[in-house]
Length: 94
Image (tube, rainbow, N blue to C red):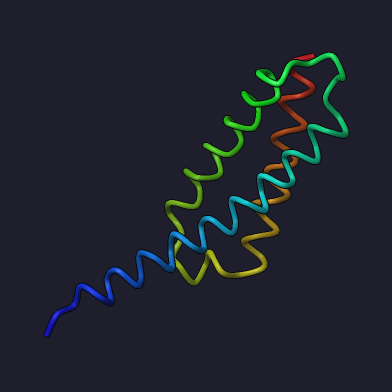
C-alpha cells in the first residue's frame, strides 16, 4: 500500500489553505496601504511593508494544523493582525 497520495493530498490541502489565508491577508494589507499610507510613498516602500507583514504571517501559519488554517477564527485573527501590523509600520515609517 502506497501512502504517498495521502501525503501529497495533505500537503496540497495545506498549501491551498495557507494560500487562501495569505491572499485574504494580502488584500487587507493592500487596503490598509491604499487608505492610510502617505500618497508620496513609493511602490518600493509599500512593497517593503507588504513583504514584512506577509513574511510574518507565513511564519505564524507554519505552526498551525490544516484544521486550524481552515477556521474562520484563525482567518479573522490573521487578517486583524496583518491590518494592525501594517498600520504600526505605516506609523513608524512616517
